[in-house]
Length: 380
Ligand code: FAD
Image (cartoon, rainbow, N blue to C red):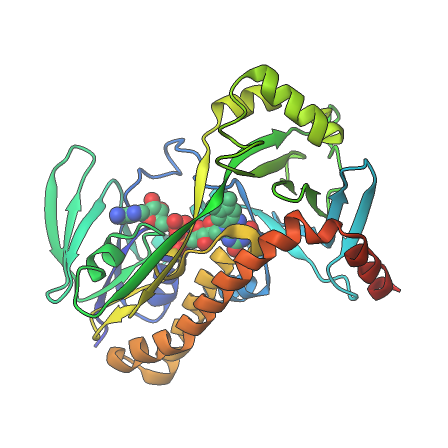
């Protein structure tokens, strides 16, 4: 008998999971904290575009969304390095023209929500999960006016991101190990608009990096000809978010560090002053699930820093693995959730570690002469 599934969070992973579960015949209801982003302009949330890799494409194929997203994805075949000495270098990702793809987070999320609804899932917006009574699977929800209600879930997934309500509730239970770690750097988004003729101001098929040892600027292309730039920068020290207080200090810093970029960034000073500064967190938790009643998925299970471009991809792979386990074990959810955690937890831990290491590679190692030489030899 198909069971009813309650999902917390209609983000990238929660919406994709809903599609997969609907296709297997489950009744699905999602409770989402935010209003409907298809109707209200709430911003796309963190990072306007994302790098999608093979793991992500595979999961989108299961959902039936691969072809549609491919039309609005921009292949990035390598890194384009903007060196401190003013020179530039292109490092291809693979010998066979392999690429990762820049996709709009907002468009992807909206399409996933719509497809989830078209497949029969219900999304209830403006419902924040306050806590879950884990043994009874009772979800405490609050709407935008503060009105509270409880829902008893048959099967519950926490796809509600790094600060998940279900995850927080697990941490209050006996023998649950949980940890989180903020790195010293945060990030701020900036913008390179399209050229006057609507084209791109820099190479379109590349992930652009300005490596500056302890910090870096990156830029990913958007289909409207613009680039979303992200400055990964320490919160404290010199230079840092804390040390750049005035417009004059911001201007002087960018002129010194990114002289080739600012010519393309007419609003970098006001963007820097006005855009939020966000922190970066890694989380670990064990176990990830409770009996056959509930489980964490995506960032709720394994939030990682973004330097490997794999957070969403790993969350999508959680969905692919669950889909395959459903095919294998039917509705034996006790086994499915046990095996899901056994398969996915080591991967989540590994990618979290790789993501932290890759920050050092991206902001520092890629610019070292030996690394550039190695890449040159690999190309030949
Ligand atoms: P989220 O995207 O966080 O979605 C959670 C959803 O749950 C949201 O809709 C939220 O509103 C809702 N919610 C939250 N709390 C509650 C609650 N209490 N009750 C109900 N609903 C709730 N990954 C990549 O693969 N490639 C990249 O290039 C990449 N770049 C990144 C760049 C940056 C700067 C950052 C910060 C992250 C990046 N990531 C990238 C990681 C990626 O953003 C996440 O891994 C991905 O968003 C996780 O999806 P999710 O659905 O699990 O969580």
